[in-house]
Length: 391
Length: 192
Image (tube, rainbow over all chains, first blue to last red; front, side):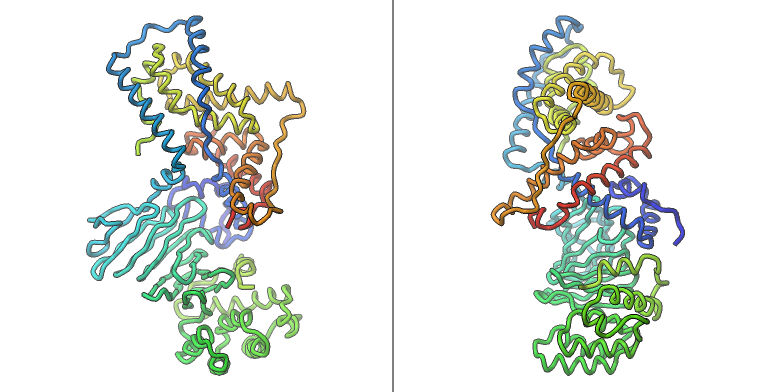
């Protein structure tokens, strides 16, 4: 991408000072420009720190100290006579009392942050039926404030405007909650049901918490589904999504999917056009507790794997141990031979330089082939993957 | 919830212009915390200096409000007064203290496990110290943004510069904060 750098607009973007169109252009540039992305991360961190600045309370003695000074000043430079009626004075006294009690209540209940958080909300539009925000059904338009649940039944659907960075469509029988919305983080919780997100934000600005993983948007479109047991299925239609639970992370590109399970976290991503037996075997490798079953499933997986399925094998390489790790490497090398200078020992020994070189080579295979896969973003992708691929 | 500032309307300002003490106290109660916060952060955390500066600002406001004609928003006019007072105070202090103020910054890196719960407080203190070390042209837009909640346009109006300049100064201020506080960019420092 050759659009001009956007570093000078980073704070304005984060503070919502850009128009929707400008925000979109900003995000599109950022996704493809490593230089601006580095600067973005730096400014975003600065904002995170600045947000910690507390408002301080002026000491009580200030007015007592100020009053005689004001009187002295008034003597030196007298005002015209006051025009406030006794009613206005009474009103002012009442307001002062209100302000003082409000201030005391704020201080003692430590609610300052919560009050400002309460005011943060996203717009919700009804698509079908009568979705509910909290206990209230919305007619056509409503608001979803931080902490509130949006719930649809079997006949209703809704659309949420995610600030100025995208949209989320909420399908039937779904329950979502807005957890956070601020310049450096927008976060939803999907407790059950299905949602589709289309986000034009820089990487890692929009997150969805599910019972078994957190989906971090890397500039993309995807659907996420959570069943009644807390397991989820992510299907990415454009860009990339990272699924994470503690240290376990899966990078899922367009055309690929990934399942998650409570406690275990994200499974291994796979392309949806891979064979049914490949996908079935992967499920066993990821979630079956028997070592023998997993090893047998790995054999079927190898038989069915195509060059593009090195996406799956790459993740497995980071996750399996011992002999299986060598088997994964050998299969990958057979499907997509490593570039010169990259050796079996180096990869199995996690030599970071070799790992990076080979992964860069593999990216084009993962992104460039397949029906429905958008034109690959080449610039900057390698850097992003270097940062995000599971260690 | 009604913002406290919404209580200050044309009638209150008019009453202040005519010297009504109750109206002025209302104005004081409404803005004292915000004015004091900016004064504290601008004086490197010195609350005694901030007390003086806050008093001076309200004394000046008491007199100058007679000149307020409503050509701009009252808050813009007030914050311009605050910014100028803080800059004047800084200039005065630099003359008196040629070596400038120093603010002790704590490093929460090596802390005992039982101190983890205080990590966030330490981050807050470190941020305050880092803010105090910024040049005024970077610090004031940050204070107006995060303490007063002003938009870029309002900050530009207070500081007498363009929106682009505000954006650029905030950018540089944020970058400098990130660099100065990079040692705190870890979950332990945030008590996570």
